[in-house]
Image 1 (tube, helix red, strand yellow):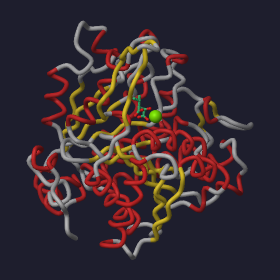
Image 2: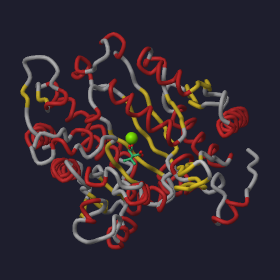
Image 3: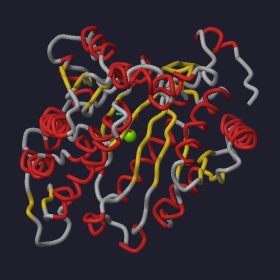
Length: 396
Ligand code: IPM
Ligand code: MG
């Protein structure tokens, strides 16, 4: 495929499509390097805010048990970020936390966010630390699988026959678009104060995330829905055009369908089985993944992996749930499943990832439920710790 270098590529010192490391753990080169390094898997743990520390305890115990069961040497070290760091008089992303992440093979990260900053401008909010980490390591590819666990199908607010067989991978662009483009900020003109954010995508950014989506689809059901808003936005016209060119030049074995984002939201709740891989820009992908979470019964069930050039980052899709902090009832499963994705993608051990998925499924089959997924009767409604232990049991 002919790839045109842009000024940005030249400035960043590498052609994002020509550089195999641009695809992180998926490239051959990284594979080999990973094999050599896999003598020990070094994980930087950032518990985060709100329910973060509670669910991290369970997820780390599961991670340790899984590594032990599969004889994979594992070390982990934790450091604060976001509100947890600010409360210690540190910046949201302290230098030593960043250094720990840089030196690690993977980052396991809890949710960031604290209601004390509810009225603060985005640049001062604790969530900013997450965006900084994503940008710092150029983690442009955010994988958010939406696959309801069979035992939980009845927990979804949607009808059971509508969700049966749903298996979607949302591929969200994570380092560009509305979240990161300039101009941004607060300004003033004759009509008063105004705020600005910009949705900008270079063709090379669309190409690199499109490539991830097509290659993921090649290993799945070979269908990509590209969610855009090409009927209203120039940036999305370019997105569509670029996806079409990439498809025609390299991925004709995959079916490409374009879908407007508003229609995509509707189809996601009315015909979720139609989807295989959905690729979307940063903002649209953020929204789609919360809708997707409801198909699985709870936002407390959705894991994610963010891959790119630097240390891969693994985080749940949900937030810090300030309303239930310290009550020991948060659902640790999204972060536990996230630890599974860490083994699959950062350690190249899908067998360990699968063992964690299975252990979660078994705990749910036995009837264990945290409050958020205990829709119906006859369940053992448990807290964070007990749920973690119910999963652990199947990994020992
Ligand atoms: C997510 C979250 C973050 C995002 C917030 C916390 C900045 O909603 O990971 O989905 O918008 O990316
Ligand atoms: Mg979100």
